[in-house]
Each structure stands twice: as structure tokens, then as C-alpha cells.
Length: 406
Image 1 (cartoon, rainbow, N blue to C red):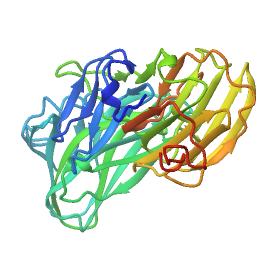
Image 2 (image 1 turned 30 degrees about the horizontal axis):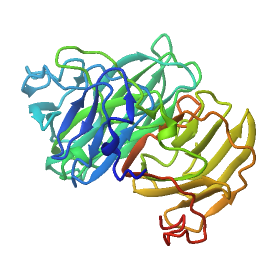
Image 3 (image 1 turned 180 degrees about the vertical axis):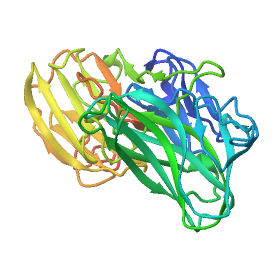
Image 4 (image 1 turned 135 degrees about the vertical axis):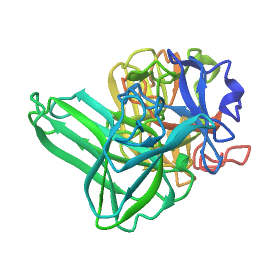
């Protein structure tokens, strides 16, 4: 069986995702995708096809990410930030709107002298506890003026139950005049001891006269070390947004698997590290006891193969190589009488003895590690997802191919 693109088997690869989600379409527009539908995704600036988006479940904490309800004018003189946002002088709202599905607001900061601290709060007081890992940030573009005297910071303020400040965690960023859709500035922080809540904000300082305008879009915050795809509520329906997991599976493994076979899968990791190991392709019997997993490590992009039969490990974390984040990688994996063989990006194959073959394999996962929770790729799959009913090794098969070039 040969499948050259994941969408060629959309009727077979069943996507289970309760509720809608978002993708970037082929023109760079931000588009909502119905539940239980593959999220084909493109780069918002280059418009290059990235693949089918696969992510773990996550809650976007910013309740007013859409940037609506603003009033044009200077803050303190009639101008108002979007609903749920606050800012102090000398900010002025120049306007806002929606560009190809991306909601934004244009804010001008102008001062004849230096600015000690100015904040734009987009996440009001939100519960947090010590040890919470949070990723937060926003899209931004320098529309006019200069940042020569200015320091901009992504910032989260951790506070006690009495709202006393514990710490400001922040990371400087410098937006350019490039399209804001391709400029997301983020930071990752861990809530310190005694944390009871937190506030997300943009901070700025200047050492002299200041006049510049930023276009700001989709502030986001997740309790995770990962940055996820944009999520925000419908107009007027403000609140935190849960995006459920993309579970892509085929429950008829016999269609794909026999006593031997080969998978070829293109994949693109979204980040170097994850909250957990990240599945690329897995086969299981509906439990954790019989399965074959090909996955990325939690802390880096090491790529591994593990096989279990009856709960007994047959192959223990066989190292295949190191993938590259935000780049297309190709994993070739073959099984059969000669054992397991795998090659990453055309490198020399690694192999392991078959041992006791996992029994009763009945399901194939894409972008998720079988038999485990929250073990999602958090990246992209495709465009190639192919399966061949033959085992390929380092020795050329009758058709002339090896595992490295199949």
C-alpha cells in the first residue's frame, strides 16, 4: 500500500478532536477548522506548506485575545484599550481590525522624555501555583518610529494570595517592520514559591524621547513549556480557550501492517524540547502492553525506537539520530523477519533484533506515542506519509531500494 500524502487517506486517518481549532491557510489567513478535521497548515509569511498540525490539549489563558472593544484616542483622554486590556499613558490607540483572520490593534507611545515603566496588561489576575511553567507572548510589528531609546519586554508578574509582588519575569524583544504574523515573541518562566496568581503584560522603558507605533496581535499564554498554535474565543464570547488534542489514528492496522512493512513519514517538530516525549508514528493494540513507538525525546530532538511485547521491552530506546526543529525531517522505519530498521533523513540505518513481535497490533497513530498520554508531536506531519508492504534493510531489495532511500 503506497500513500504519498496524508490528505490522500483523510477518509482512513480519523482525526478525533472535539471542538474546532485554528490553522494558517494557504494564503496566510488564520482560519477555523471544524472538529474532527485534519489541520493542514501553511507558514503565514512564506506561505510554504508545513504539514498537518498535531498538538496536545492546551488551554489558552488570555480571555480577551481578540483585541476588540477598543476606542481610538489617547489613554486617559478618551482612548480605551481592547476589552480586558489595560495600559497607562502615554499610549494612544490609533486603530485596529482584522487582517486575513488575524485580529490586531495599533498602539502609539509618544513621550518627550524618558519613560521609567509603562505596561500594557493583556492577562488580568489569573490563578497560578508554585511550579507552574508558563509560556507567554504576542505578535508584534514596528509600524512607525524608532526603538533606539526603547526596551520592550514580555513580562509575567507572579504574586501572592494578597497580590503582593513576588517577581517580574521578563525577556526583551525587538520587533521589526516585517509582517506581524511572522513575529511572535515569547518567553517561558516557572512560578516561584508562594505564587497564587499571575499577570501577563508588555513592559517598556525608554532612555530619552520616544515616538513609535506597534501593531499587536493575539497575546497568548499557556501553562506549558510549549508554544502552541493560536487560540482565541469568538467575538463577544470572551474566556479562556481549550483546544483539544489532535488524535490522528487508523483503527484498521491490518490495512497497513503485515509480517513486514515500511513506513516513510515526513515530520516537523515545533520546538527543540517538549513537556513529554513526542510521538511520530506508533502502532499498538489499544493498550500500553504491545506497541512499537518512534518518537522524539522530551528534552531534545533525539529520535528513538521502542518496542514492547506483552509489557516486556524488546527494543529499549534505540537511537536513530537527531531531528531538526522547524524543518522537515524524514523518518523511514521498516520491520520484518530481519528485525527493525530505521533511518533519519537518509542517514545510515540503525537496526535491532525483532525479538518477540508485539501481538494484536490494531491501531496506527500519527504524531502521538501509542499507549501514552500527552505524548504528541506538537508540530507538523507530511506531506509524505507512505506505507510499503515490504521490509527494507541496508541491503538493496529486489526493487533496488534500501531503507535509506525508499
